[in-house]
Length: 294
Image 1 (cartoon, rainbow, N blue to C red):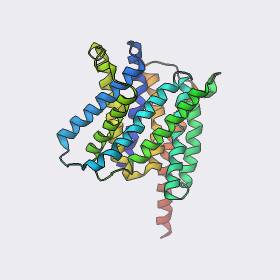
Image 2 (cartoon, helix red, strand yellow):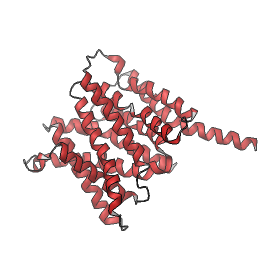
Image 3 (tube, one colour):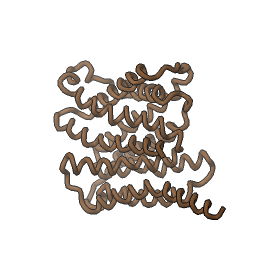
Image 4 (cartoon, rainbow, N blue to C red):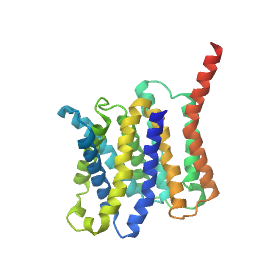
């Protein structure tokens, strides 16, 4: 249960990002610099934690696969932000949340068996809740093919991040493992989007404040918590718990940004929370029934 809670909190941390990003945008910072500052400070924080608390050495041959996991995080951020350029945020978040069935599909292909009945039922509830919470049914939208493609690509890369978080070099201590993964994220970002904010003065003009907050909630906490929890609970359940991101984003938008959240969106949030809790509840009921027959 404690590993489930850790993964749940890591997903909630992702949900805080949208509120912080909106504050950063209101200050005049552009997406490229915001993403760069987030990954730069998140990587810095994880390495500081590693130097303070991790003493175990990691073989150099273990670095490449872990850094490759970090590439999936980088691509998720880039694809998601690019999708937002041509389609509404509510549609983009729904496309991103297709990572739920993609993650369960990856687990099913790996284990060569279907997800449990409880997980399949949870996925149905989760899908309905995601569409409602995203406000998809509350407006008329013109969708651009390129935006939809980027949104779906962000779902694929996020599902891959969760999947590989539970399988790649799991013997490496979680703190060090997270730092190496974040290094892969930073290196891949520097190749795709060179960090001009480090030399153009934007960082010292105030971007560092938002970079620290985004680095904490967008890379430090989720990467560390997923590294700790996913190997223990499996990628399938972790994928379902990862859906906690959307309810958190809705709550933060309502409480902090004072954005109007409709009744249908709150119903969607409730359904997502039910979908997250349901698999564990169903497993608990199954165990009680088996014990009663003994």
